[in-house]
Length: 156
Image 1 (cartoon, rainbow, N blue to C red):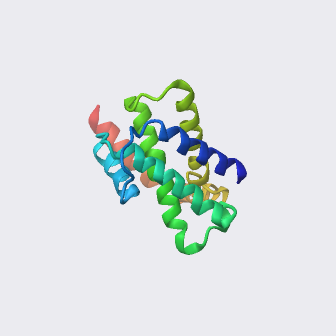
Image 2 (cartoon, rainbow, N blue to C red):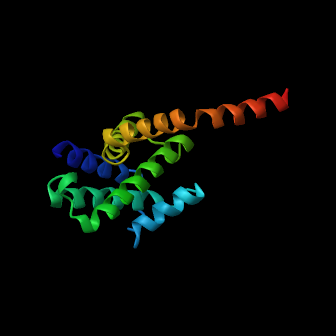
Image 3 (spheres, rainbow, N blue to C red):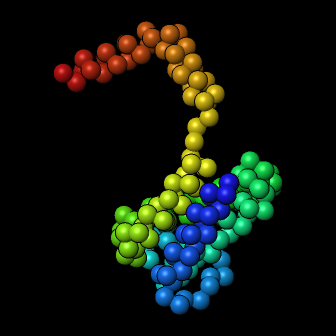
């Protein structure tokens, strides 16, 4: 928890170097979503990403941990994390803005922290899917063999 908050603060400070004195965004998430959608960096994108990073850190710190975030705002916090992570990925891919190597490490560390908090598959889901696929194949194997065999046979 403390690590995440420190990384969020460090990322916000790092992004502040690249805002070029732009005014704060009225709706930071909407500005970052617009960047993710269009992949066009505007003067409002980096300041909005900085504000979104601050907001994520504030929302998590008020709860004490990700597990204690109130149920009413969990979706909002997770969506903020998804949007920020995707924006950072796109910025790194496009190399815009041109982050220094050290700054890129700080920003990518924040991306890794948010991905760890949001992009996971619980073990029970993996087991349930494996069992469902196994049982489905065990019961319907003949239909699968006939369908695949006929398609392959007709193509040759």
